[in-house]
Length: 254
Image (cartoon, rainbow, N blue to C red):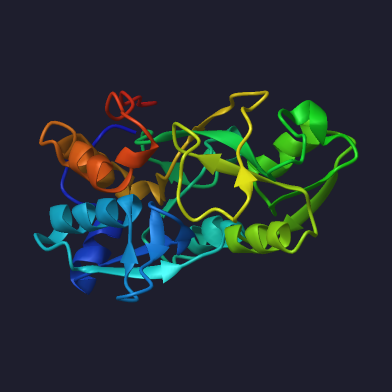
């Protein structure tokens, strides 16, 4: 949906009366939304974006309350009105779009495999008969089943569970989203990311929102781009993964 130009609707009026924005996110995605081990605060590209939305609504980026969600609980949190919006890695599908309102894409990433060095795995074709960890109720699960139908899937609730499973040798590889290029800190020792056999373009960290308030986030996103805020956030958090041409061009269904 296009950015809102009309006066705030019911959802926005509720948020305004409360005086703060409630945002669902996770704390396990390095550089995007993670818990700083020194300060204990949430940091990252997505966290900064959520604060920009709060700035747009209230004039103060501090007027935001973060609630931690797992990948499996993000849609239910929206449907149960536990959060106003979700900042989380999510693919847009027709089924999901029927449940929640999506912003236009503001980041793209690719699916990759994280495997131990020396595993001999360089593409999905090498997963036959292997154990692959991914997340419950995600498109990654369906992708693994499609590209490696003979692999044994180890489905877990969240990112950290897969990394722990890989480190302890209970699976040989981990399906994950990764921005742009295969460089990131925080991976298990002696691990590498082989080139993907399929480059499924993903929508990285889109806002998922109830439709009455969805348009307001479009305003924020559109203001972040010409004002250079998006590029400053990228340079701050994600420059190490490689250069960028900027955010994806906005696309609206109405």
